[in-house]
Each structure stands twice: as structure tokens, then as C-alpha cells.
Image (tube, rainbow, N blue to C red):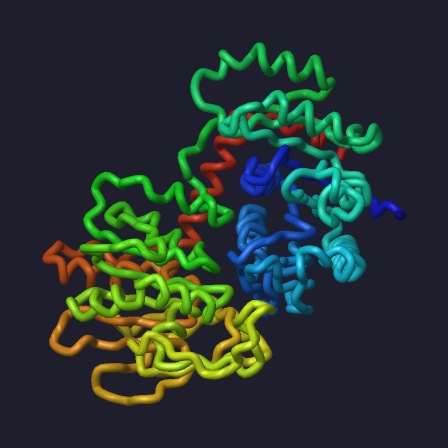
Length: 509
């Protein structure tokens, strides 16, 4: 394998395990390099996630790489994440190469069927970067652990890339998990000598307590490994959005001062859960994740999120009794909001003529009954709609908003009455608002991911909930959530620069 030589030298971030903090550290490094006058460019060869973003060209990529792009002061583009695997359940995943869906993979045959084309996509993205981003520094995030011995010869996105571009590599270990010394020594022991030479520094992540108490441990690591510990990153108390669904559990902590409680159904195949980060950021809002089968009471609003497998999740919603709960909830005046697949579930019928919304073991391609709450019907098409949107809506008031669409469904209104009207007169397929007869609540459905990022829209909707509860309204002059993301990235970089010294990685290019 011939090396691709880049100047300045790329930086690559490995972890001793999944969830060690690679995404956060990569974002922090991007922002720190930007502050120092460099031109960082984030990259992750392969990511597995249903939390996706759509770039300006209509390409699909992982949200974590979009976040790293913002940290680098760049517009996200799908070549930053040339392979995206979107789990569908039953050990299958949708395969996305360079932003476009190319097929479905089974776990046991993934490397046999997709290794060559995947590596070709990674090489294409790196060569395009080399040709068009002169003087930029690649900041590459690894995946999982780089030393899964049963996968190393087929691993597309860790040591193969590090060797290809001769990156200076960081190894991040999560001390919160326990066993940090074993994590580090075990990982380094499993590296081949030429691979170990690539590791230029270690970061201890998520440290709690007095740092001086770990000085002896730091010295031991450096003596035993011969690799400098570049710093000890403290526990950051969730200042950053989660990168995977396991971290949703961290959002269950009570929030002092919360006046509004909003439930979000935790669908088995939930997608695009970053839609709810803006609500989580609201000081007066408590988000509550509703498990299927769990009873819920006294919510001010319930949200049904997007789904990677709408029909399968709809079946579970009905089977476990949540459908009846939802109908009783809105009958009593509850507010309901469906996003993408969540909106589709609220309709009268859903038709899957090509079997795209079921996993591969299911053959039902007929018409399925929805929850019959909104008078809409959905037909799933072969081609995805992938597009960034900026449009004017007319509810709760006339205003301009933005977001993106990522769906196969084509949804139409099947019954017109004075109680329902389109969210936007300029594009009547983007969503609908239903006024519950004789009650103050609203039922809203939309295809627009990121709708709550729009500060004024979010506050107007929250004020609708507050009025129903007899609470004073809050200011609607709220900036777009992207400004808050930028502030969070600055806070992350402040902490990183305070505790981590990356000069060994960037000296002499």
C-alpha cells in the first residue's frame, strides 16, 4: 500500500474503546488548530450511526463529523465521512458511500461484500482532499478500538488509514470506565512495532477529582510506555451533545428550574436524536425519554422522533400499548409533535411497495395502518429525499426557518378540513398542524429535521405549551442553535487548551 503524504502531517485520534471520547477530542483539536491559524479538516473513514446530517450537495454523513466541521470553521461535506453505516436491526445496515446509499449489508458478510468498494471510497475522499485543500491539516477520528484482533486485517478506518497517511496518533483512554492502565497497556501491547511508533501521545479523558492525585499514575504510564501523557481532560458535565444513543440515558437527570416536561419516545430504531439537543439546552425544559411500554403522565408535550425502520417501530408502538396511550393523551388535551418517521406513524396508512422500511427478514409490502391521528398517508419510494431547506412557515406565526429533509416517504393530505392546515403554504408537503377540536392543544407533524434549532420557532412552540399551563411567556428573541453549538465548541476548546498540550503533534508540521 503506497503512502499518501500530506503537509502538514495529519493528526489521528484513537480510543482504547468505543465511547472513550474520540469525537469530542477530534472536535476540540479542530477548534484549537483553527484558533492557532491552521486549516483543520475533520475526517472519519467509516462511522456507524443513525444520527445523520445532510450536506449542501444532498449527501448523507454522520452528525459527529458535521459537528467537527463546524469546530473547524467549515461547512460539513460528505467526503469528511466517506462510509456511513446506518443500522437497520437484525444485523443489517444501510451502506452509504460518499453521501449516497449503495446497498444493504449483513454483518457477517460486510467485509466480504463491501471492503474493496469501501476502501475505494476512503481513498477517493482522501485524494480529493489532497487535491483541493492545500495547506489543510487532516484531523482523523478512528472508530472503536484499533486493536480488535479478529478484525485488524479487515479494519477500514483505523490503522490502515493511519499507515496510509503516516499520521501522528493520539490514544485516548476513558478513566471513568475504570482500568485505565490496563486499557492503555493492553492497546499498546496489541499494536505491531511499526504501528506503535505512530502513537505520539496519550490523553486521559473524563477525570474526576484532584488532578495531582494522578501524577504518580501519569509518571508510571510514561515510564512503562515511553509515550508522553499530553494531558488529563476533566469530566465536562455534558457540555456537548451525545454522539450515540447510549448517551441518551445521561439526559434523564432532573433539571432544577424546569417548568415544562417534554417526553420523547425512545423508538428501537430512533434516528436523528440530535433534533432534541436544542430543547435539552432550554433551562425551563426537562426532557424525558419514554420507553416503549412505559406509562407516561402529565407531560406538556410528547414527541415521536425519526426512525430508521418506521414500520417496525410503528408495530412495536402498537404492540406494547403506546398507541392507545398516545390517543388517550391527545384526547385529554396533550400536545403531540411527530418528526419525519414519527409524523408518518401519525397518519392513516403507510405503504411500502418496495419493502424498504422493513428489515430483510420481512416480506410485507402492503399497506399498513398508522395511528390515524393525522389525516395523511405515506408511500415509501426507492429514492431518498436528501436536501437542506430554508422556507417560510405560517405556524405558530409567519417566520423563516431552516433544517434538512432525510426520508424515503412521500406524504400527502387525504382529508381537508378547517382543523388542519399546512405548516408552510410554500411547500405543503413539509408538514401539517392539526388543531384539536374544542381544546387548546396542537398536533404537529413535519419532515424537517433541525426544526427546533430555529430559536424563534422553538420559543414560540414552548410559549404555546406555557400558555396552556398558565405560565408566563419567555422571550422569543432567541438565536439559532448553531450559535449555541459554536459557544459549546469554544468552551470545549478552552478546556482542552487548559489541560492538554498538543505541541508534540503539530511541531515541525
